[in-house]
Length: 231
Image 1: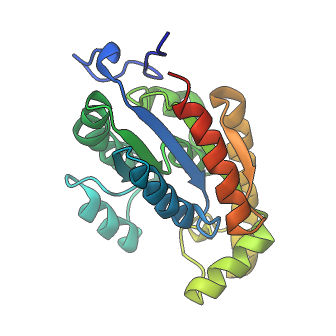
Image 2: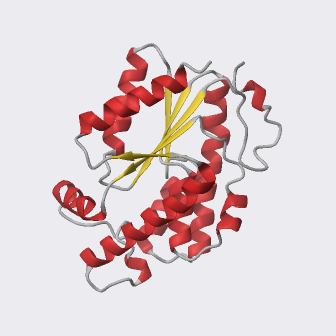
């Protein structure tokens, strides 16, 4: 029997989960985990095999993405306001991208999902129960893969790619350390712990992404193929 979709909480009004025939697959991971590289390859693989795919991710809503980007650069918002900003971005994509694509039978490939948003907020001291309620609008994915990379490796990868470390990915707003490298390591360690805490509730899979890109990709393809073959 075909597995029906459901929401984590209250969901979106007037949406019948029985109408959602596609698949929702999430790839999570920090900047430098290889997440974006894997997403590009997976999209090409899925579409060349005849499976239409829609991509979603953080800060991609046409409603608030530009304003959210400006707010982050200004670093003027409280943690609650920033959390609600991200939740609005996510809600808009759920209603206007994810739900319509699932109804049309597409594969929705999410470059991060509510778990990153929740982990970031939890590290900043926000209540996990409140966050679970906030993201009760989220459809439950068919599969979630978290690309796990050691913080020390993430430092090297980010510096090799950008020659610098991102303000938010280093947790500089938290005052963890005056040294950006030390702050990055402490923040990414805390994020890893938050993901392990969330994994107990949401049951997503950890993928060892310290390995070469090809090895990670082969594992992802194998696991996604198994999900697609479930029907």
